[in-house]
Amino acid sequence: MSQAAEAQVRPATPWFVRELPLGALQLFGLWALNSAGVWVVQKVALPLPGNLVGMVLLYALLALGIVKLSWFETAGSLLVRHLAFFFVPITVGLMDAGSLFAAHGVGIILTLAASAAIGIMLAGRVSQLLLRKS
Amino acid sequence: MVAVSEAALTGFGIALTAGAYSLSLLARKRYPSPLTTPVLFSTAVVIAVLMATGISFADYQPAKNIMTFLLGPATVALAIPLYKNRQTFFRNLVPAGVGLLAGSLGTMIAAALIARAFKFTPELVSSIAIKSATVPIAVEIAKIVQGNPTLTAVLVVITGMIGASFGPWLMDRLAITDPISRGLALGTISHGQGTAQAATESELSGAIAGVAMGLGAVCTSLAAPWIVPLLA
Image (tube, rainbow over all chains, first blue to last red; front, side, top):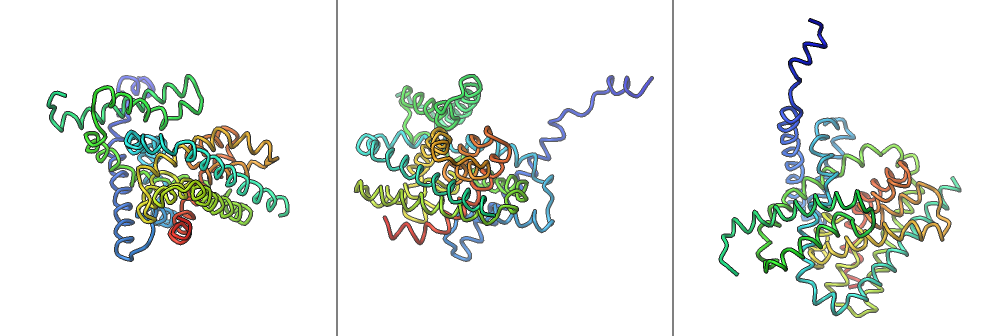
């Protein structure tokens, strides 16, 4: 029997058998880095979010070649792809902010729109000007 | 309301949120529009169901705490796209870096000043000032600058929607045509939603937006504790 036929008879390990323990291990690694970030912030009394320090830590470990991208990629790209999901429970808190929006909704939206426009104009125009000069 | 065990309520909250999110992915695929952005759409569905069933936000809180546990590790994972796109960014470091600083500081100061002109409370001014950082980082900065984390999350999401939907239109009017600049502006001001929008324009814009989202958040969290107390 040819090898190809044999491979058909005996299917490869299903993806989740390989990916799930790997993903869980990677998730644990990301959690550990986050905890390390939170710990550093508390210890040094930095005015920075702990998760941001964890992110910088992971970047530094990758850049220094201490860890490999592939060690975190399965869980990491899944989390990044579905990052929006984790915001939903937070924004559901809006249901308690109804009175605030009833009172100041128009002002809040105007403030957000105007400041976003100013920021986009500054970031876009300034970088484009410098890119054309260089 | 009939007495329901807290565990059942928590399970329902998680199932509802996961279901609403899955529905939003389908809705976005079929009807792509700013209104079917996953966060906006899922939030609207969850709130509607909670209100219809008479469940308060306090009842939903345990479910929320379980789900947001992964937000920290998810933020750490943002280092991955940052690392993957580092070469494009470093090649254009000075123009992109100066643009990023101008954009993220400019929008923070403008937002705080306009919010003050509306005579909002200091808590609201602080929350508005940091709205361009990505949600998981913004909610943490909110605690540092005496803003309100929940309110901040909402303001960040609204900013994301405004920037992603009207940003490209505005940049066309302002003759901002360079794909690096367009990606930079969208990622700096509208974080994840802006990055998703930039990625639809070109791969380069998307990559730059991803880096800008990460560095913009770094910039905001470094500057906010100094600038926001002066303006709030």
